[in-house]
Image 1 (cartoon, rainbow, N blue to C red):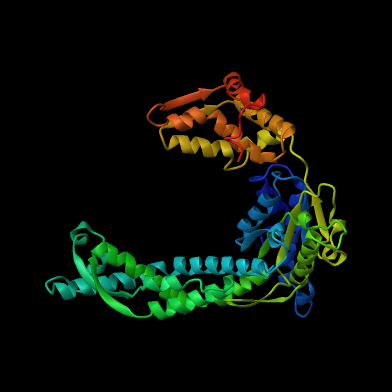
Image 2: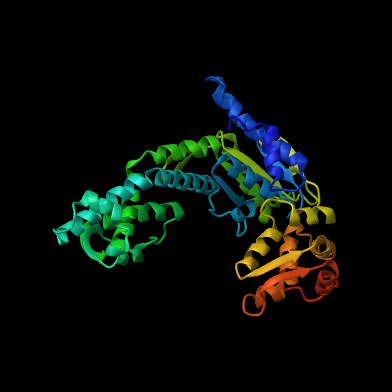
Length: 434
């Protein structure tokens, strides 16, 4: 993190997201300020709060991708939620604190994965030691367990059976989950309790050596996670480095009426306020403060603006960046320039079936041009339009590979334009527009 200057962050984002320089600069500075805050001594450090951000612009222009890539860059837990999910059926109990619990759950999964990676080798040795001891018990003529461990993976033992102790599973208890009347968090706590009750006992089971090695390795890794301090690290990770992306925040702006859906929208804003101001949220893993979680909100703001949010919430999102609409050149760049762009993805999919696809520049521009026209004629879904257009263009290849189509397939601009003509002309493209 210390090496990630704002300029470095922007350069990294440029590898994955086309354009939108202003938005990239804003999130890069917010990320660097997190590192700067950690260099400040207490008590001032606790007073330095994150500068939350609102990204403005139509769908499909990179708002979510910028936030997601930012989290990936620094290995931060990240969750995306839609503000509208808390008001779709009237604000009658959908808890906005659930987004923080989702963030903590993500942090726990990340830290548990780290523990598994760190302990895999030692856990494998312990698991293989148990299997080797079981083999030796079954056949005393075999070498000692420590000599058997290095050769357990050989074909010599693949057909041998051993009797090893494993945790007892009781799937019949699953009928109790989730318990009637319990909310999501309560159901998870109940599930944990039942799992501990039903999975604590062990019994000996006969199985082939490869299966026994795999089963015992998983149990050893589970034990390493249970005995570790990853939960404490997870809570700290969520509190200090978590990023919550709230999409469609413009959809919870009320029209000024005090009844009907506007009550719901106003209620969502009011309940979001404590989270972004900083509050304590109780999760199944422990309490978490939200003071230093970075909140990035986004919305199209068609006919509205961030100033239409309640004043208290506006003040908690001081930074705003308006993303630029995409033109045809942007769509062409998005199709061809990012590291794992859509064109590379489709080439890789076809290569798996022995098809070497070669789309020249003119063909790629035909895709961008068709996507642009469809966005103009229909609902503008931004770069998301590229995928159905490219799928339509490559439909015969995707269907025909590998039995009907193999080898190198080259396609130029004229052929691509002809194949896409029915889309550009308003034909039946419903199959491709998701």
